[in-house]
Length: 472
Image 1: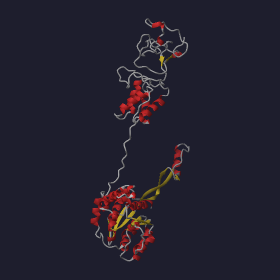
Image 2 (image 1 turned 180 degrees about the vertical axis):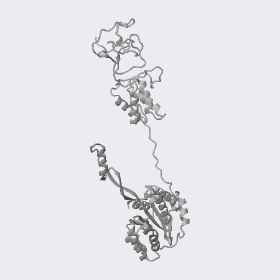
Image 3 (image 1 turned 45 degrees about the horizontal axis):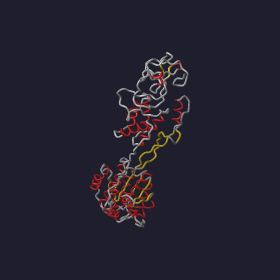
Image 4 (image 1 turned 30 degrees about the horizontal axis):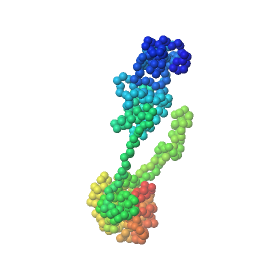
């Protein structure tokens, strides 16, 4: 006579009194190992039956609801196989709350626990629960210490690991009941909140152009429009917005290669480190070590023209200099040129741009005066540049090139500066105007000794100037 596993077993015991029709215990209540007349278990275990020693298949399992208390045939101690099935029914512990829906979370349990739980996690994600792979791994680790055939253990392991918000609990209950009962889960996808991109407040001029239907303005943001506009033609509100955007510049500095080396993933082979590594490992070559030159900040010197012809741009250029000082305070120097040479590096070290501009304004005695570029450049080279400030530095001259003095003196000093500096950059606000040509005497005399000739009339031009400084 066959046992529950299909193999021949020992003679079946006599059915107890009260069993109808002489049925064997395995035929009562529809579950193997059940005793006659016993009620259905409130929580079944769906999985492979436990085996006793000697390969015999037991008729009754001790301690199981509805089963008899006698030991399985063979007389040996009961040995349980590793559990491979996911719980197929709720219940199992007296007094513990069960999964939603009650009764049996029906269907045959899957043999692949990880695959079943991964599918359950996908169902939760479709319902709006953030059941990511890390949380799924935590659930699998929790079930490794629990009974995977017990629906209550599965329910609580998933609820405590896969749910991160109180709003996830009803979704989890709904998905658990639907997924483990074999029904199609009626998930409600949660719409993601719209992403609102922050943009500067629209100014009066730009809003008026948009109202008139200008397609170029309507297709771009207000900040993008302000980036290209000449700062001399901006309103007070637009100028304040440009000042705020200039303060956000965070990469106005230059780097140079040092003579010292540092460890690197690529570059020149570091023979000393490689040999020491081989000796530490008893002669085994495990890896090759490399080295590369270190980089150090390169000095940046800015000479800002504050004469009358540069008054529409001087404030913006000084705010750009403040951003450069803030990025590299130890390697940046700022001077103003007009009728006198004034060093304003210390004033620009204030953290707040407005406070720095107020300090600079009180320190400059020749604001909106004349222009003597040749004499001021000679004073800078005699007092600071020749002693080392300009040597190997990136020198930026921000001026329109109007020279009231001798243009030949300016040419001679520019040639002298070119021999000392690593790179000479000239930023002329008028270069950004259509049809501009460097025809003034001062600009024509200085241009042959300039490495980079850029504009400085807009925010985009200042960003380009910052890129030129960084690439020098």
